[in-house]
Length: 284
Ligand SMILES: C[S@@+](CC[C@H](N)C(=O)[O-])C[C@H]1O[C@@H](n2cnc3c(N)ncnc32)[C@H](O)[C@@H]1O
Image (cartoon, rainbow, N blue to C red; front, side, top):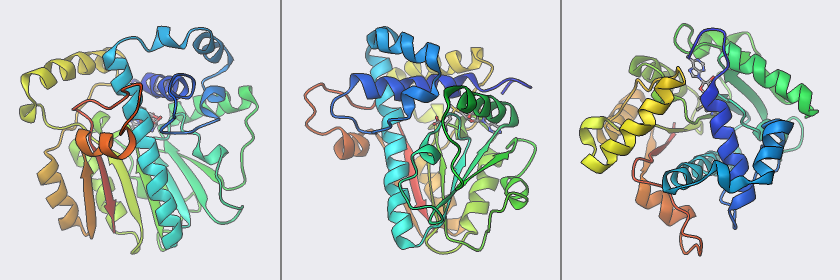
């Protein structure tokens, strides 16, 4: 990320989630705050002509994937709360809105939004502008994952590593160095039994078909020119082995087929995710 500037990709992703609310029926991810949080101007432009922002197959693949990964995270969180999860750490939260529509009674699930200080300051200003109320069950934790560990960041924020915790990490790992990703996963693996994480990741370019590679190159160029280049890539099988070695007791890698089968089956509009999509679910 560029110094002292909020993440541009966080705004892009939030626009796609908002567009999903307007364009897709049925919704895979129902988020009534998604349109509010993008800000009045963007919301009006999107509402006036949602299709303008979401033209073409690649846009629909990306919009479907943004919806699906958030849905995986919140479905897995709900299972976690059932198992005793009482803390939800959203890593690289961007304009994620869970905290502002937390369905659990106050005191059941505390949310920690961890993000780069510049993005977080921008989000807080956006929340104030749009009049979204800050819930009591929310703590903001500014952390730069490249220079600080999340452990350091969370330590002073009231987070209790002895409590069962669920982490989501959506749209962030590609922007970090692989070692920073692994260090964070090791920290999550050291949380109590019943804890877990959902994250998405980019597969290694060497594993891609030529068609995947050309789509990947286009997307990679786009994020790099926004000053947020992709840096970490993984081999799904190796990643699963690494997660097991860290101490995760259960892992499930969801690729294009599984994601489409779970959330996009039998749709009349043909909405689905593309073949670069990968979401990992891991439980301690
Ligand atoms: C593509 S956005 C995704 C945001 C959000 N998770 C979502 O799905 O809407 C990437 C997020 O990663 C965060 N990020 C990128 N590099 C970071 C770093 N070094 N430290 C902390 N956060 C970082 C950005 O601030 C941004 O919020």
